[in-house]
Length: 180
Image 1 (spheres, rainbow, N blue to C red):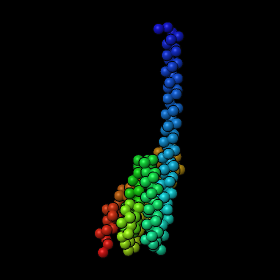
Image 2 (image 1 turned 120 degrees about the vertical axis):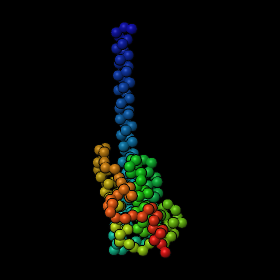
Image 3 (image 1 turned 60 degrees about the vertical axis):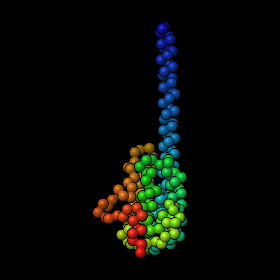
Image 4 (image 1 turned 135 degrees about the vertical axis):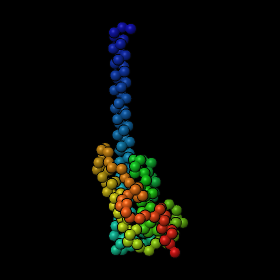
């Protein structure tokens, strides 16, 4: 093998690496863009639920308003869930758990229309406070993730992992036991 052939082979390898690395970087940027778009759509849907709950201790929303918001929330999250970062994929279940523990059946309408027809539970400030607190936390975490961009944001905790640890919780759909 001559020296010119060796240089030609080396040039070929360097060119191949030069083509591979930018393509890989562009693909990584595309994945990040898709994730950020899914986070933005999920944040908007979560804010809609939070807007419904935020002042519900003063004026409780109607069963129909809760059904409507939760059906839209579930549809939006189902549409974008596969593109969400792994630590955010539990958001739909966690928001549903928080809402059903506080409000009861109508909050599960997006999961099953039959559950959505069940009566709501009477207002309980403790469960409303947990629900409002988790939704506030989730909205803030999603906003932080959007602002952080490509930097590594804090993982989103599920409803079961979310503090405060000293407050008791019921399992998902535990509100069924409170219906009389």
